[in-house]
Image 1 (cartoon, rainbow, N blue to C red):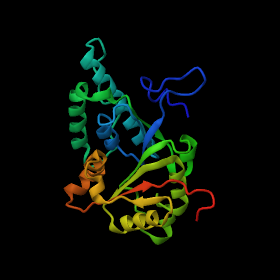
Image 2: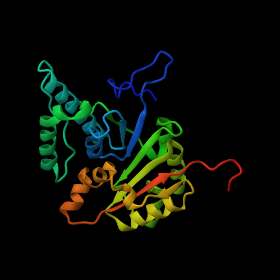
Image 3: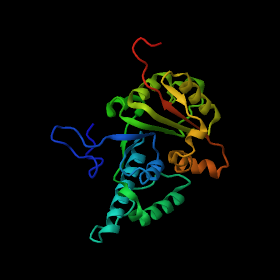
Image 4: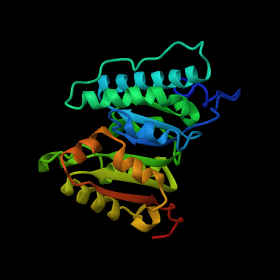
Length: 252
């Protein structure tokens, strides 16, 4: 995958056809990009990618990233055109809150380390095409934030966590990499924990081990869906899992 178009200031094409940097964080079903925006200044040298299946939402996130990049540059150089958060918000009850946040982020963009150059988004069905984008062991973090619960039993096979899909996630995630999950649906939380616990290449990380991890706070509070849960006084169920090393040949 050529990442130079997505990260023009960080991913540079080398003469041998390789790229200087590759994506390390993947937000599967990134929605409006709240997690990407929160993590961008925390890891300014790390490339992060949001994957979203909805065309309009993907375009919105692309426009927002472009506007924030321009706002950061304008804060450093007055000759850069004044940015706007481009595109229309997909209609929902929280449009006003989202717009206010966008305006604040544009105003403060000049203070953001890295200037949002390290985040991007693509429209794709990660359940079908994830290995097309990432090499074996390329990722260090994968995020599953408030995925579709698919409540009906006959639809459980469409959930983002399943034995088959976990094999793909284990392939693209390097040893010691982390999978972060959060949902407001207890049944889905228990489903994800069960399948990750049962997979031989993942182990759950104890809460005390995560106390200094800035990603936990971002996962819990940065997304539009997470804020909606808070407004409705709902519960959030979080779990994180570490990718274990591949077993040695002949090891059971």
